[in-house]
Image (cartoon, rainbow, N blue to C red; front, side, top):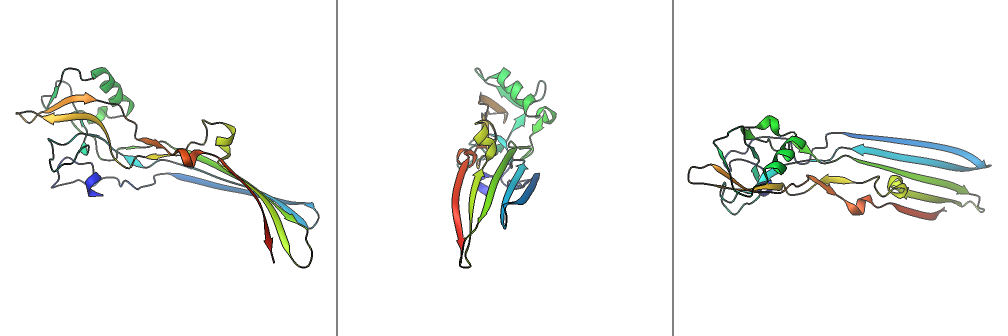
Length: 214
């Protein structure tokens, strides 16, 4: 999506990590079956995964930087010590900005721009559990009862099993403009996370049923 691409110049967007890369994903499956009822299997199955969220960018407002009606897509500039390229406007949250730079590992880019998609949204972990029980029937039919629990961790604790991903849009943290000397004017700072909590995907779900085969 070119309209949502974090960049420093429209005519030469640099190559960077894709918005849709999945850096790390670990999956596992455990299954065990036993005939507690002779001739009818009871099977327990657990599926789990842990994955890193997609990459995203913290950006600056860009109405004075790129024009064309685009906002919040200019790569974030990190001022160096006594940086002549930046003017800090009165009321700018300097202390909050300093903590933000340290917490996100952006200090190494002082005097330059944070690369696009430098950081990633939070990791997500999910465990699903299923029980299948074969049922004795007659006349050549088969049936089984099942119980499925999606996101067992969230069922055990509301703070567990949270499903996260990156916001679709870049997260604007600095409102900036250009002065007559083409210096960045940092006017306002708002700390925003790159992680979007997917509430519907986080909620646990329980399903029960009976399946017949003829």
